[in-house]
Length: 77
Image 1 (cartoon, rainbow, N blue to C red):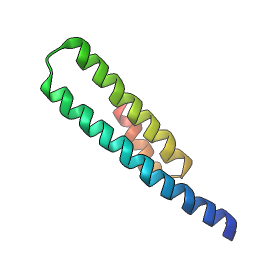
Image 2: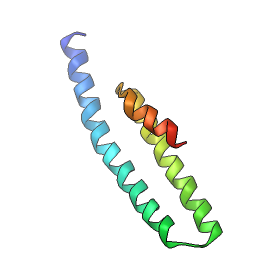
Image 3: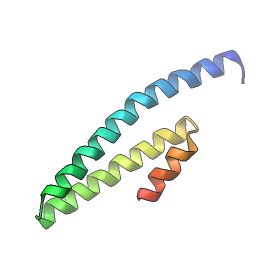
Image 4: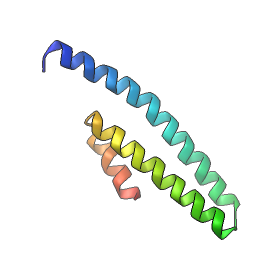
């Protein structure tokens, strides 16, 4: 990998870190909400939202070659 490629990958990884934090915070919040509700429609909505966040995080991890994170997200789906 040449210098420009390494620099580009570092920028992607920094962007991933920020994006990953947002996805993890959203999933955490949705999981806490899930614990607090008995409403079937709300449960369905929250589970779908968690899966969307995991899917987005998986794609972002794939873009920066973070295979372990990608595999964890895949297992959540």
